[in-house]
Image (tube, rainbow, N blue to C red; front, side, top):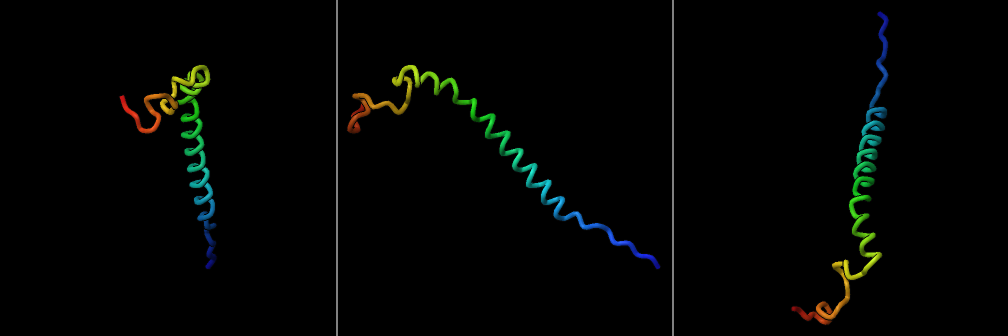
Length: 64
């Protein structure tokens, strides 16, 4: 009898899964990067556009 062994593709499947996962993470990260570009530009022009500004209402726990 002539038996042929099938090639084990376990590491190939693991490599493909890792590549797909890394590609998915990269796509999400790159799409989220542009999300805040307009806000960043507005804050750079005028710091009062930021929610983290340090003005009189926000000093020492003071409220309106």
